[in-house]
Length: 126
Image 1 (cartoon, one colour):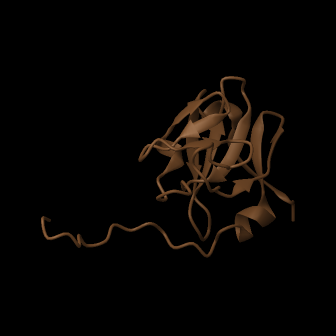
Image 2: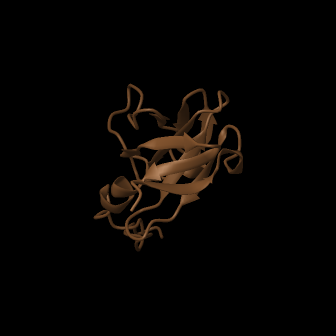
Image 3: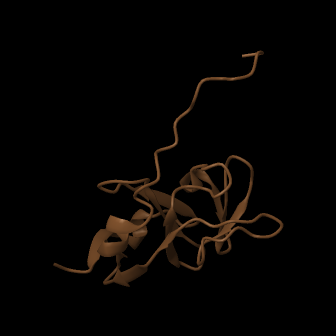
């Protein structure tokens, strides 16, 4: 079995955009493509409130979470100061124009996290 799983062509990820990857279990992975044509992979979950990073704005080598505008570095998954925290990152390689992710990481990284679910409102005003 190969250690790398082919996901898509680099061109399938919009420039300065993202694409989500569904895993067998655990939260989705987000692929990002920068203006410099670099590809990164992070758990599709902001470390702040679990916002979907794949819906954020990619700029430079970072993505802004769509919920509260936290900036996450694509290369490390770390939030920029003054914010703190990080989201797991996944190894990426490009082989003949195809984006590949490490299969072992897909099978093991953050698979125990529960999907984000909207809960009942607990405020009296709801």
